[in-house]
Amino acid sequence: MSEQNTASMGRLSQIFTLLKQALRGDELDFTQGSMRRAVLLLAIPMMLEMAMESVFALVDLYFVGHLHNSSHAIQTVGLTESVLTIIYSLAIGMSMAATAVVARRVGEKDPEAAGKAGMQAIFIAVVFNILISIIGLVYAREILLLMGASAETAEQGTPFMRIMMGGSVIIVLLFLINGIFRGAGNAAIAMKSLWIANIANIILCPVLINGFGPIPAFGLTGAAIATSIGRGIGVCYQLYHLFKGSGVLKIRLTYLKPHWEQIIALLKIATPGIFQFVIASCSWIFLAQLVATTGGDHGSAGYQTALRLMMFFMLPAWGMSNAAATLVGQNLGAKQLERAEQSVMKTGKYIIIYMLLVMALTFAGGRYFIAFFSNDTAIQDVAINALQIMSLGYIFYGMGMVLMSTFNGAGDTWTPTWVNFFGFWLFQIPLAFLLAKQFGLGPVGVFIAIPVAETGIALAGFILFKKGKWKTVKV
Image 1 (cartoon, helix red, strand yellow):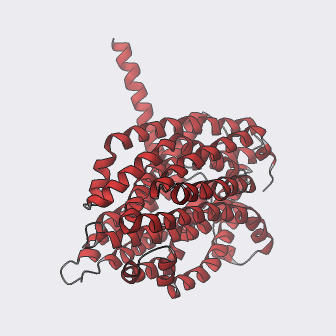
Image 2 (cartoon, one colour):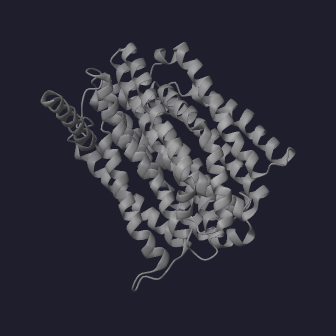
Image 3 (cartoon, one colour):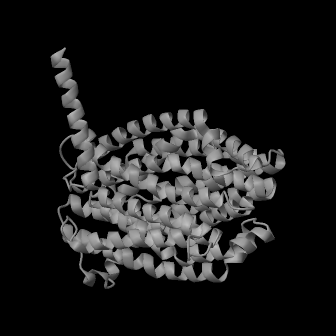
């Protein structure tokens, strides 16, 4: 009995040490040693990082969901987030390229080249985003109307949209710099930057939305101000550690000077990556518009509530899949092809376990979660229906994420782009339109189309993964 206790204590001690190491952010060589340990050391902070990213939308949703006429406020937050996914696509596409190239250079033991690649990615993203920010500032109201918002919702939501779109460069930097740190194998700094940003947002949201002392109540607009300030603080934390120079990455301001050969190399990887996420984002935008036009304000608000809650549970799985991208990139750089493939299978196993737990939790407590974010029963009824239908595909969402991250981590960004094009535009959108309009199912038709399409995407990804073309890509 005492031997069993000693063994149990030893295992607990190992788990505690692993957790401490993962959260502390020790920079390690992931091209050797235990694969299980490597996956967990990267996956734990990446999961927590993505959970924190989803908290932004949930915090906003909670506070605006308790405002007067909350259906207009919830719809504005949801529709704005849908539009911002295009900006997220730019940020994610560039961060994928940065992760792939930085990870490959780190695997090749060339930290200076890794630092230069990261800074060139920042230069590209900032230049592109300035144009997007200007469009968002000028056409905020028109964008909301185009998305299917009512005239009253668009009028109330224009300041919110303007602030979020105008400060979108902060969103891009937050994603991109975290991608650079992930490629270098330091997922803990990426995680901590999101923690800091979220703590600031959680403190500022109620103060700026409801007012406090001499600070006036900005209502819905206060949520946008709080989120932008919170993310800005997170970016400042990232920049401090990026230029600190104590880790694997060696960064200098001179690396920001345009290096056209490096820029072209990054864009070759990032462009299909950006298209990959634009394709997915535009699909989600179309679905949001279809729900808004067939389900009205309450239908749209219910769908957006369910979607934000679903993303809260799914983003940690995306974080875990990012571990596969880093491990694939570093091990391909070190010419260890078999180890790269093993890292994908190990990560996939952990994601399936996580998604099964999330599915059980969603069905057991979905109604309680939704009631927490909105006290409008009409919104709650739509949201619980949407959540239960969409959560049926959780396992396939998780499988799809890790497989797409594998291709992206290898620098093979065209493969998931084509998979997304066929899966979302040629299958999900037509299916959703057919079910919602032709079969008269309305929003329910949209809810059904989501897990069906995601299942097809995951199966296509697995077939292409087994073919192994991703192992031969040069970056």
